[in-house]
Length: 215
Image (tube, rainbow, N blue to C red; front, side, top):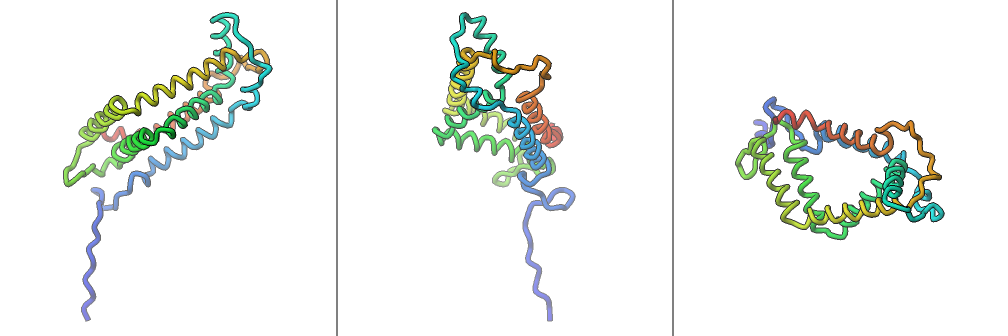
């Protein structure tokens, strides 16, 4: 008795014959998430108690701009993680209060991630039967970014939210007395949240080989 015919299996395969992985399952994407998560945890583990940030007995009006600037520098050095958290919360609240802008920004980030940054270099981008080169993909995403940032409400929303958050930080830093803070003059320049930023940059470098392979 003849065996039934084998059903054909369709799917994209790389040049080596192995089935291609979706961008979200690539090692570069998993390494990026792992490093970013560990960097965020390390940064937030060094935040100061919020009770110190809002201590009512530690606020006073600065005598002049020089004193206000000195206070801002000292307070930012001590509360930098808390300040960056406040800025992030302001940005998040602004985006959540404008769902269209939030969805537009998420779509833009997803397009960059899955169509270019984390897309395997041996897997070309094919849309409606047309294959796009890496240069064409990069140019297209660049044009899309300019359109989203400058021709929609996303750009103005991000700028206004950043200005509001920056104003909150400056006002608090100018009125918060830093005399009761245990500032360590020997603290490394890359400590605290700056170390988190460095870790985030390291996390972003996990996608470096994927990008460099296209340059």
